Structure formats: structure tokens, C-alpha cells
Length: 217
Image (cartoon, rainbow, N blue to C red; front, top):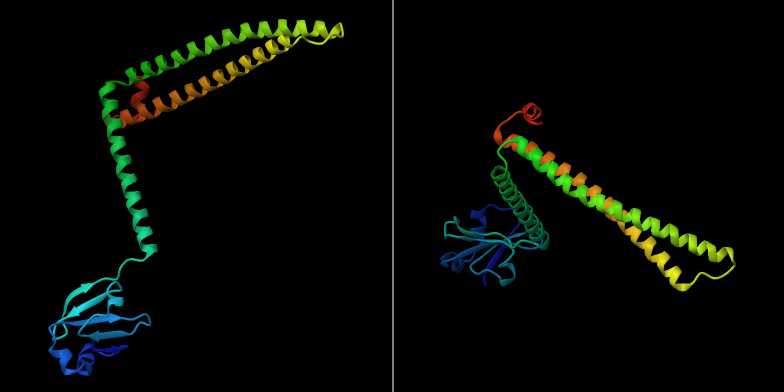
């Protein structure tokens, strides 16, 4: 391989430095080494094939330029950018589907309000059932505690089966309390969801927010 290194000389001067054989070659390459020095030669060293190079004509015109292979950091940045673009596209598509379903499900704000009330009422039924069950279990727990207190008053140990019933009743009450709290959180989520749907519905219909108050019961 015949090559010359040039730090900052013009290309014609670099070509002048090349041997006659290199000038007569069909191809001429230009590349940059790790120190930033520019090299010209009739063959491209394999170690520079992925570091960026240019193929030149005999007159020094660039025929083909190969950019350097991306670094690991650049590849990671590219993947991150592609992931962000994909996520953005997915969000747009998901919003389009939600909008389509919203317009297909409701024709007026009144219908949205009615659907919200029905959803809230369904959860209220669950809460009422939990409260009734908890009231019943609380009565049982109080009776069991009274029995246990009687044993302690007589300085007798509480029977194991009574202790087990006490634990079971308290555990069920705790579970019912948790279900009621979860149901109330569900009601908050329903209100938030319908508020967002109502706002979006008005936007899609081209109605001002004030129109919602007039349309709502």
C-alpha cells in the first residue's frame, strides 16, 4: 500500500506528494488516523474501514464518502430516541382509539353524567354490603370479646377455639375495612375518569367548557 499523511495541507499538495503509481491507480482513498492526521493512499487500511473514509477520483473529487461507524454511546442515544418516538406514536394511537370509543359511546354530556352516576351507584352497593357485613362481624367480635373477658375474670385461660374465633373475626373486619377504603378510592378514580372524558368529549365536539354546565343536570 502506498500512502502519505498530511496534517492540514491542501488536497492538491497531498496528491503531488503521492507516487506516480498512486496517481495512476483507479481509486484513491482519504482517511484520518487516531491522531487526527489526514492520509491519502491507493488502498484503504482495514483498520480504518469503519472509522470514516472517502474515495477520491484522480482529480481529487470525492466519489464516495463513508461515515465512521457509530460509537456505543451514539448507538445507545439512537435507541433511546427511537424508543421515545415509538412511545409518542403509541400514545397518539391510544388517544385516537379512546376518542373513537368515547364518541361511539356517548352523544351528549347528559349521557356521560348518567354513566358516571351508574358507575358510582354500583360501587356504593358494594360499600353498603361491606358495611352491613362489617356491622354483623363487629357484633360477633364484641360477643366473643365478652366471652373471653369472662374467662379472664374467673382467672381461667381463654380456650384456644375462642381465641381462634376472635382472631378470625378481627381479621375479617380488617379485610372489610380495606375493601371499603379500596371502593372509595375506586369512586375517586371513576370521578376523575369521567371528568377527563367529559373534558375530552367537549373538545372533540368543539364545545366550550361553559356548555357542559348548561348541558349537565
